[in-house]
Image (cartoon, rainbow, N blue to C red; front, top):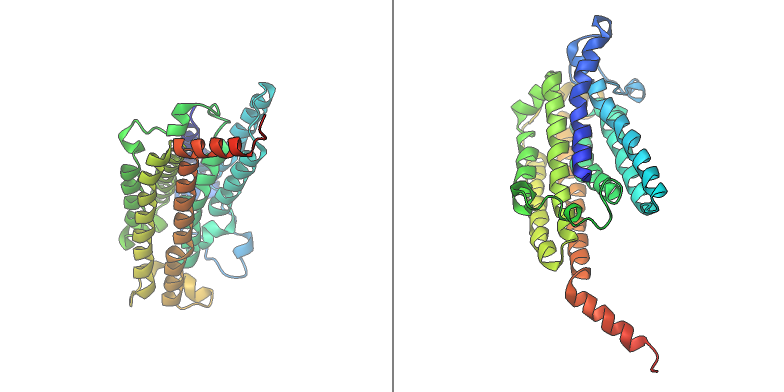
Length: 316
């Protein structure tokens, strides 16, 4: 089974969390709270209460708990078959899982509904950090290490093409930063869940396509690198617009910024800088890594390595 299918299935399990939450009953609070606790309409957040503001909504908690519950038995099964995945893959998956928990369960989730900069930190985790780490860690666990289809990452489908995946990824990022739509997601639990699921889902497809290109030779890697560079540029543009805008994009978050001692505009500027600089650095490093991996896997590189080994071998 391909890693992306497993992780996408777990993402979809968040929808099942909605039904689970509704079964809890009216004593649990409003439906919105059962769907997603990270809403502006939830209990007001202050510096004194932020450390205890964990988000335990079934819709977001269930996928986070399901991932290790599915991953660890698969790792043990591989070991019993004598094809245990490298330890670094398990570490990468664990890092991605922890970041996902930080974004969706820790107080950061609630904080992201009140502060623009916290929203941007959550956004960076969900679209640029957790997905590639999870996918790198899943390789060789839910797909055979030498499985060509897993390396291709679904490149046969139209969405598996780097340019198309990049367009879908960029569209999702820009769409959910439309002020009216994002503020609507902060008010409505169902729409908030759709936002989270769509961002994580399209990010998994995006990163799986590009990581697959890195294992498909120099040509595919060189074709994928411009997609990452274009992503760097358009997310940098969005970050710059947030940073230099003279007006507020998300007035709904203004009270939250004031409660934490920030002016709403300074909060927005900090959010823009986070998208512009650290997030851009992730894309730049990924582009360089993919090109390097693609060149290392190219036939010319293999020939050069073979010649170097022959030149170093002692004469008979």
